[in-house]
Image 1: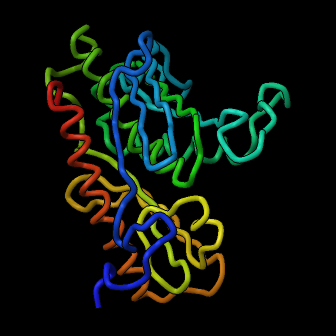
Image 2 (image 1 turned 90 degrees about the horizontal axis):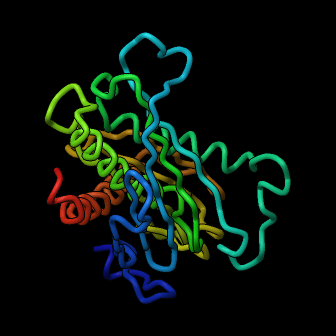
Length: 249
């Protein structure tokens, strides 16, 4: 039995159907790269900043670095969150998600081609309805490629080709009401028995797989099906990225 022939979701999607996705490049005028990603009702603005500094462990290495920061606007969700600046420190969740985004983006780039430069990707959630970290990886990659293109134009890269290992995108999957689902909304995520986030490079090369049994444990067979479901969704995201980046990649 196919996914589509089973449960219909609250928004009318089939279990294997993604929400509408839109990538808008150049959304922030002053950034070295930017992308507004819209995934259903989720909105994340991703911006890239090129700096001429690297972490201490890379000084003298002639190699670069990519890092990311993540945050949510106070009214990005159904209730107001206190500003992290007012608390005087970031939420632990924001720090961890920023690290996840940074790790994923670094896996997509030959850092040795950057020289001693760091590209900072800021991911700010304007509106949250599930899948913000995966949207940040997908949109953050587009902003990153814009920044790499700018470095190429300024002769800051060690080669004329963009130092990419392939496109990078991410999506969520899970088990909700005993049904394997692609691209969970917040309401689905909140009641999922299994929650999984998957980041992948072109060619089926996994970069990050986070899978947690929120309710009942899951089997190896379920894990394989969820990974296949995620890959199918990510392949569609690759097509959107290719279209958004077609003039520079």
